[in-house]
Image (tube, rainbow, N blue to C red):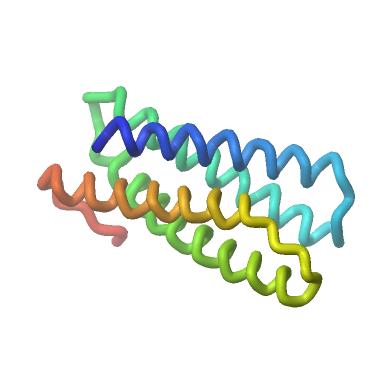
Length: 128
């Protein structure tokens, strides 16, 4: 399961980097919208890096696990919101971009698998 999580983390890191760079280079809206996209993309990259660090670190994992749990829950939120937003844009503009749904489903999958993995390891983790 750990390898599958790392595959999803790699995919979401690369996707978030592409979206973030594209948002910075191509003007597709107001500055606040572009800033929001870049901040969320950076957050997803950070969660992916945290996932990789957790997988390859054996020392002082408790803090990393707490942050990773919150990050995984954030992936669930970002992925679900992204899917809803994609369908909304498809309805309003008529332009359905299925690749975005695929990326958001990968984020949700990464979040679910990470939470499941952390809980199945038997660690006493909680977001509080």
